[in-house]
Image (cartoon, rainbow over all chains, first blue to last red; front, side, top):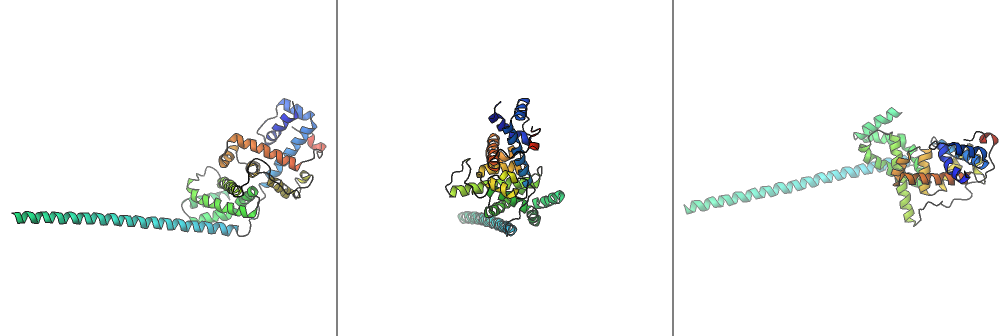
Length: 121
Length: 195
């Protein structure tokens, strides 16, 4: 087995996603170069895992900026729903007015028809 | 702490903006840390967390609670960071291949890996992470620091799971080569029972 092939497997063996089969195992036991790489990957992954608990101090003003951004978005949302409500009321008003005008027109036409009938009679 | 977070999430999902603001207070340092690790600078990290919380607020009703809120927030933050970096790269007409970005040669000394585990490991590692391309950095940060599954990483980055694994492999290899340029710093104790 060649070092290049073993080297490709080493990070996955270290993170536990691959198991070292007997061939790989015997190669590493006999190969100083692969042993060195294995140790380096172990140290690298361990150091990366340790970064997880290392929480950074946010840049000054970060929290204020996040909250202000959320508030502005909330206001925009409220404004949008207000405008949507007004638009609904406006369109509703037009519909009611159109219906009322139509009804009035129908009444006028009906009255005219009745008057003509009376005059003819 | 976990119950406190869960209560805040429930209240925020019901439309309580004050509860969401409290969630921001409790979690923003964590989200900022992830954003900083992915972008490498304070200004970008600040922009990314602002966008992430906005998306979280808008999408909170879709959060089912089967994952931890923090994990859900990490995914959103990572997605925002990738979008932010891509937009920035496009603006600069940069190529966003899988190649290393030019790193400051003064940032890492000749045998930086020798310091891993010592007090300044954070600086050395962060500097090595910054030497990776944003795509490689995203994968290694999400997998090896934040322990996100390959599937979630692939989904957030818009790539296949196979591609995410290949990227991770390349990123780890580059980090190892950068941190351990010399092969001779091995101790006898560490080589024993290596596998």
